[in-house]
Length: 371
Image (cartoon, rainbow, N blue to C red; front, side, top):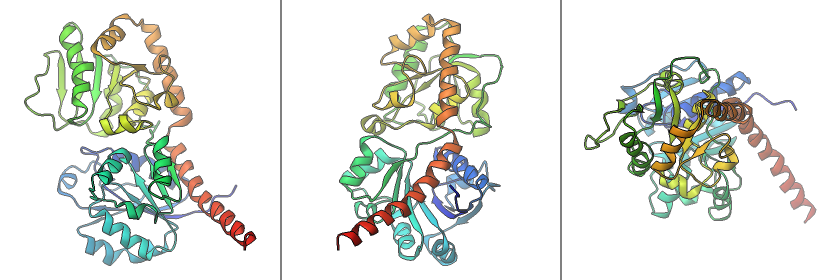
């Protein structure tokens, strides 16, 4: 099948800064692969203070990036780009996202998609009447709803909220940046993540408690915004922030990495974190909390380990033999490289786009036959 070269505009939270958000990493991998496939890409990003002072990729080589200062500036200077695009993608958590979406929908001649990198959080907000960046009424106006969450949530988006087409577009990994390196292992277990109230109890149970009970082992936690009130065990090293360029060496420096999941994601299920794919690509075995759909990503016990308590963590760290540990990491790595790279996601996105016209033609022909 010949794939046309598309003009794609993305309005997202950030691509220039990975500071305290997972959006930038996702956009970078996806858009880079789309550019490799020959598509033209424009990324529009609101100038926000905390990203402006922490831009680790201010000028991506794979897309044109425009920073705008206000909704008025966005509307004044990008009308033609939006109107002439084959596909416009609006991301979750875009400032004044509802106004942005209504403006795009009013002038776009091509397809318009919403890319929800925070689907369970978004739906929880809508249930509370919180329309920070999306309203229930807008969902049925998008041609395509791309979701970081799959499974039953896609049915909810279509049946309850009226999305014409809801499809999973999970996060992904760049195997050119994340891969196994033969380096000295410094830590028995590590964790990478920004502080979150609803993740902290799991971090406490699955890492901090085992660290206190295993003083001979070494641990590391990297990520910003942790309260000063947390009492870290002496054998846990704290790193305030790691730039994405340091993530590979971080994963390769530990025997196991911990994954803990936000409560909204656990409730929805089918919400793999980008950290899962990044760690697996580095062949680092993962210890994770459980959520529905995890076994659709990795085989539990063979490609990933699931812990429900500190006892489970301690058992894994103490009883799994070295060759078994390596094999778990290797199998996870092979799974990710076969199914969850940025190349796979770019291919999925283009397929979803092409399917829109195909499905629309089917509906038109069916309507004609019924008249």
